Length: 322
Image (cartoon, rainbow, N blue to C red; front, side):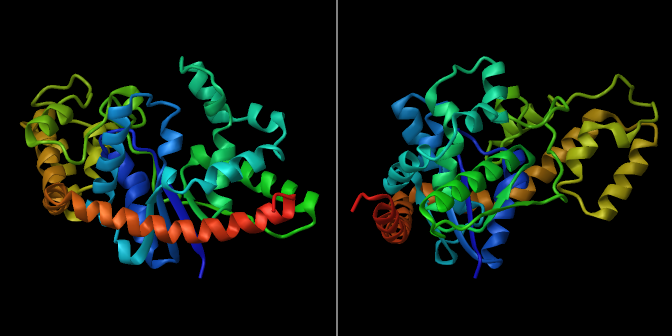
């Protein structure tokens, strides 16, 4: 069975871009292979340097994932820093990674161009990602378009190591890009991202949800003007939550006088709130029983640690660190 690996940084509130872009696909992948899902706590340190905030984000992210459908009996779910072998492999792989490979990193260039401080953690991020993948013999890696280069880097590093030591210790992973999932737009029409302050949160209160939805930008057409749904940010988000019949009815309303953008926003808000209500209820149960979450993570740590320890022993033997 193919081993699938996916992780998410604990960077705060989950928004609908996170959900439809990655989490929903991760949950569905539990039926496609052996899923390994982790909270990327080491990766998060490139942007979160506050102890209390990082701890809070890690635990809340675990609860969010479990609430949104991740089933611990169908996958291995753990926190990255609970399995230290990944850092040992990160160092070993660093010695088989040309400096020029990291210098070509699109993500590094993009983040530093936006004012994020250039440091070694940000620069060598792709090597740690390679260690995440190669340590667990993962083959299928669900990714977005911005992660394609990181998978290519992982394959390059794995090939370099295998060729140097004349071994096949590392399997070559394949990035799985779901072309059916387009970029989820935010309230301002750009890609939904915390960096752009344009998100709609999954687990927000109804009051906050209304505030976020009402921020969606539109053109200046009035209540009695005919409106173009094909270019409307509200309609683009409605497609995530409405079926074909509902969308057809909405299209008619766009072309009928007396329907304003405010009406469409309220309809969207109700749909979002209704969609995530079952998940919200499940999340409340986990928040009331944190011990259950800790037990799930501990069980996942044991499963991931066993695989990681056996793999790193073989790697140590190959490089001369017996």
